[in-house]
Length: 384
Image (cartoon, rainbow, N blue to C red; front, side, top):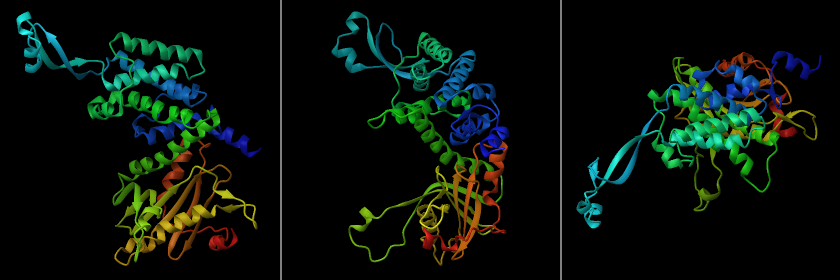
């Protein structure tokens, strides 16, 4: 039985590329801080054939459920000329237009409404998905739900980022969280990938770029949740690292590249610091001397993250560990080597495997480096 047949046997179900759609859903949940919904919506997930279809089905499911429980309302600042006082009187407008003579008064007041930024975002996302998904029934459902929102008074104008930032989903609005997050995904990930540049992305290109974004973001959020209950561990994401510069020229700051790590795990009680860098590419390439070799640029990058931060005043920096994490595109790898006191681990996670196998693999990221398996990696830089 070939490798592909084994993967299909291990992870049956619909696939997007080589990744089961349920694992795309797994990545999305962690990337969007929605892990609480894991295990839900399984039927809708397995019926999806591509990413817009997946988002469309889940958004329709979330909107229908929200409509049954009533949409959340908000307050909208309104200015109107009325025959009675409501809210605050706009004195300048009232007197300059001589409204009192006509028995009217200009007022400013907050109106309780369903036409909130979050509900407008959802309707706009449904309108967009209706023209993107290939399933006619699903497209009809998107248009129908967008119409239902319109009949309730929700306008079709997409809210600005400023409006959305002022309408944050709080703890008491947990029912809106899934609906709003899926709608954001339509505009933040799917549409830019199709619209940017001078050419239209294929389904394969769009799906690969979206999965790359989900993979890189999901790793940090997964570790945050996993280690939050374990004593002593802290997780920081997107941490800028500073070069230890001396005798710099005036213009070097403008041209010296910066360094930003994906995830840093730290446990002072155990005396460990782990720098994790994720890459959504194959872990191997070819060199002049070998058919299979780790990509030297990524190895040098991880090495720079570790060695550039070594300080005598920071004991953890002198023995910090590094992990280069890839999806298992061309091989299943978990190798280590210690270079100048730093354990460097090169590993993959197979996204075609059952979800629990992925969880088990990610949990091993904090495993103590007691056993080292090498492929003669001590001379990587001399042979690439």
